[in-house]
Every structure is written in C-alpha cells, then in structure tokens.
Length: 437
Ligand SMILES: [Mn+2]
Image 1 (cartoon, protein in one colour):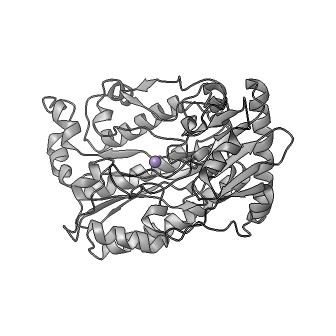
Image 2 (tube, rainbow, N blue to C red):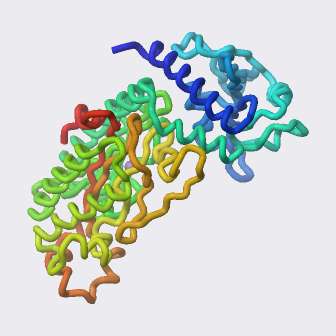
C-alpha cells in the first residue's frame, strides 16, 4: 500500500487538473476557496462545532479556521494559513504533515489583512461563505456553474479519498463492535453510545453526524437523536454511527437483536441482510440509481410478502400503491465523502444544477444519477414498524396483516448500511471487511 503522502500528492495533482478543466469551461482565471470563520450561538460567545467548508477540505486536510486557498492554472495551490498570536485559543502550527509540501504556504496573523490579500484576486471565482467580507473586490460569488462543475468532480473519489474513507470505516467498525457488546450486556442507549465513542477513540465532535442509537421502538424513528438512560436490556438496537478520517466520513448502520425479540424480526433481519448484500453486489458503473431504488423496494416487499406481513399484491403493485413506503420510507443510497450526504447525487451532468427529481412509490433517492467509477455510495435498505407510517393505512385489512404488525411495533425496525466504491469490476465494500455482521 502506498503511503498517505504519496496518495495525497497524486490527489492534489488530480484536483489541479480537474479544476483547470472547470476553469476553462467557466472562464474564470482561478478560484479562491474560503475555509470560513467560526459561527456563534445567538447572543453568546460560544461557537458551534467548527467544520471547514467542504470545498476547502477537498483540497486541504487542515482543520483550522479562516484559511484561504487559491487555485490557478499551472501553479501550485497557494494556502493562506491563518495563525494569529493569541493566548485564549490555540491556533495550531502547520507542522510537518504529509500534505504540507503540496502547497505554497503564507502564514497570515491578521484576519483583515488576509481578506485584503484576497482582494488582489480580481475576477476570480470565490467559493464558500462570507463573500460580503471582500469589500469592493470583484470576485464572482459562488458561480453556480463552476460550483456544479467542482461538485461533479468531487463525486469521483481519488485513491487518496477512497483510502481515507476506508480508514473511517475501520474506525467506525471498532465503535460498532464496542457498542454491540454494550447492548448485549444490557446497556441503555446512553451506555451504548458511550461505548461507541470509546470504541472509535474519537470525540463526538469528530464524528461525521450525530449517532442514532435506537433501542426497541425508537429504532423506527429515522433520525432519532436522544440517548436515553432507560430502558436497559432492550431487545433490538439500531445503531447508525460513523467516524471520520482526515475529514472523510463513514456512515454505517447495524441492527442487533437479542433472543427476547420476536422470531419474525430475526427472520426479517436475516432476509434484509441477504437483500442488502445482493444490492451491494449489483453496484456497477452506469447503474441508474432511480431504478436501483425501485429494485430495492421490490426486494424489501418480497420479504414482507414471504412473511405474510403484506398480502394480496405483487411487489410492483405494493411499491406503486405506496404500501412498501409504510415499511421502507426512505431512499436506498446517497453519495458519501467529506459530507455525509455528499454532493452531486442529483446532477444530470457536470455543469447542471440538481435537476433529477424522480420518485419511486412516493420516495426520492438522494442519489438519482447513473453511477460512475470512483463514486462512493451507501447501500441502506430498511424495514420499520412505526405507527406514524402505518396509522393512515389501518383501514386496509385486506393487504396488511395487523396481527403481526401490531406485535412488532413495540420493537421498531431495522436498517443495514454499508459504504461501497464503484469500480470497473466487482464493487468494493469498505465496511464488511471490518464489520462482517
Ligand atoms: Mn446513510
């Protein structure tokens, strides 16, 4: 395996070439990318957890605030590195990290001076927030076609980015293993979450999104955030939690069941796992994600039919009639990268805005494009028993088996999610090698 430095050097060369292509198409002489300042709570001197602008992070792994990056054809990227003299806060030295040699670096200790320097890049495109801080300088404020062009490129991951995502999966998997142990030992949602944090060795602020730790019925709330101290000794755990490596996210979901869970749930989990692995195996270049969602909806419906939870319809009808949506109410897949729901999933082509908006059975996938080599996507089918979704169809006693459904509602539901790289051959599953189950 090549080391990270070598991979990064190749990454930055690729990004330089990609950016030059976007610049020549959009007729800007260069780009200034702003990592952005901190944001503060209302009438407070406490700041939100800081994340640099993703466009900045794509080029530069530095986590610090206010840095600015200038990309021009034929020149090494120039990094204005913000480092004031301050005794309240630590502003880290650049150090000798693997990425430092790839930039021409100028350290600037004053924020206003930094903005003054940017004003010299007249007629460049400016990417990121805070364009208003530029005063009278004429830089184009986030021109849509240029941003689309860069976003599109960003959806094709370089070997460096794939390696970072792989490492983020390795870290996340350690967290999942520790969390599952806590669950099987009777831990509460809060105990399980603490075990996850400990297992990853990362602070919560370093995780890519707030972990979803749902025990029993709470597992059916898709973005459930509370971490309760009770109950303990749950029957079902849905854990959707990731980690990061140099800004790149993993996004992993596992569902665990104890013997106290109804036997139907054990069977559904076994079947859902088989379906999820089949879906991962069918990932390939040119696959239209909209059809892929439909395929997953039919496969999930088949499980519900085989288990006699749905009746008297075929899978196609169940999707169209929106019966499937009552159990599987979300998309199958999204792009994954620096952003957990990464960019360009709804772009039809490089310089077009997000225009792909097609539903399947009342559900829109975040990813609507045809897949391409280098895309990293999630595959995350689910089956839930949630009164909010099922209440409106209760009058239908012909197609829904309420005897089983009502027994399962107290246990919530399940989802299984892996991160997959599209390649020319068999897709690479970045999750299963670290977390087989
Ligand atoms: Mn996801």
